[in-house]
Image (cartoon, rainbow, N blue to C red; front, side, top):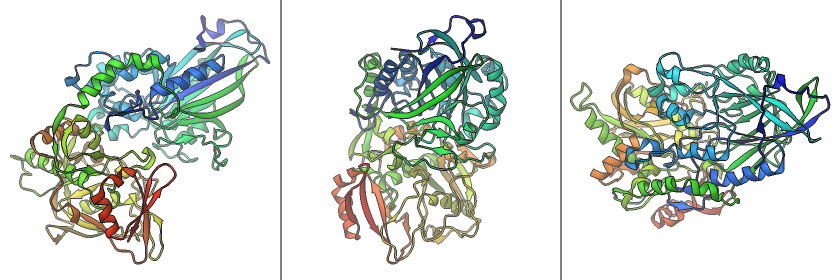
Length: 635
């Protein structure tokens, strides 16, 4: 491999750099790997997937072979997301080595990495242990550990200076100092409040970068690369914004930026140049070279910087920005061999039987009608919460349950759906139904709170109009897993109305909302009615458009992960939806209208579901671009 070598001495002690000297520096970047190291779907138990670090490794080796000087970065959310990534957390696997993700990154020779929000899912102590095995340094500037042992052990640096030796175009070698600055969304203290409350402070990304970049320059950085685990966002910065890459790129002193978090692609080949500082044609954000390499090891980001010596320092004279798809690349044999033991242990664990399902459970229609898989999960949460409230002041209060279908296609593609068989279930099925490391949480809510919760969930749908055919059902700016369904009540959603909230949970003026005919046990729900809602910690702490729940209203938080609770429960009671789940919710009728739902082609393998759709007047329009099955739904 051709990698840029470490400079033997400090830059200021090296031979002076003649003006006009030129060199090429290639920056390679991964982001949002989410522990997709192997090209394997552990939930479906199927190999040969078009993603994974073992495929990206092939792209990395090729990209390094093409140029003299390369640096390899990761932009965060690397450690969590697949069962292999969870090996170090599961005592039953008896895994004794480092995180397989870290092991793979060590093998590939990463130069530096930033942190993503999911790196904090398992707490600070786990994170310190895990990245302690990394051969590369880690940076995150806007996270502060206030005090205590965690601060002494905290291995993450606010910024890095990488001293490297460039091979120039004339064959000479000269040092370069590359400053690297990592940033993470400040919402981590909300999303992972259970682990981070009182142990970690987080600051605005843009203001932190504005303060830190001059320090990098003062330390002698020729170039400043920002690893922003953040979506592109708006040109005008808002304090504590979750997605701020465009505003970050606009700061003085930024030479290149790698962005992520939103799982998007930038630049997109063939796209128009765009506006508002987003230039796909030239690969620029606010005039700065940039890449966003999707998620799950599907793409490698490549930034080519043409460097020229000016007044004894390196400066960027030109650039190229591109993404390389991993889908058709072969897996890297040395990396596969290195990870073979972890892979086999993961398979062994995921194939262990845990119980049974009373019927086939899938999420292909979860955004169109009451869904059996969602109802089954709500039934488990309701039973668990009812038991855990026994002997407390809340025993006997009506327990409702809220959960979404976690896999509903969208940017995850046509295979991003839960599909559990009738009969024997294994660990992988529980992980497929509940893939995230959340905990069961019980909160005290009123009838008004209940209605508000449902309004926030209803933003997942586009506004539909009477008399208009083939309108898109989903609001594609909102992930499907924000559509919480609440069991124990019945209600309808009027999609002719504007949603009450926007994507960030801000109240929209001039709308009365979408929730209609909300009832509990057949009676209208009064604002002052009192319930316990079983949900998860991620939602209760304010994820998506949902408001964080005040601590005094939280009546229970489980010690174990909800996925483990589900596994244990299935071992005692067959997984099944509530008998009346089909009456849980519905869309209000819209005369003369129809909507389009893009779902997984696996729906066609359920003859009963397809027959029910046809009986209601729905039409299978065939497959569309991207491999989705398109269904026309009458309203």
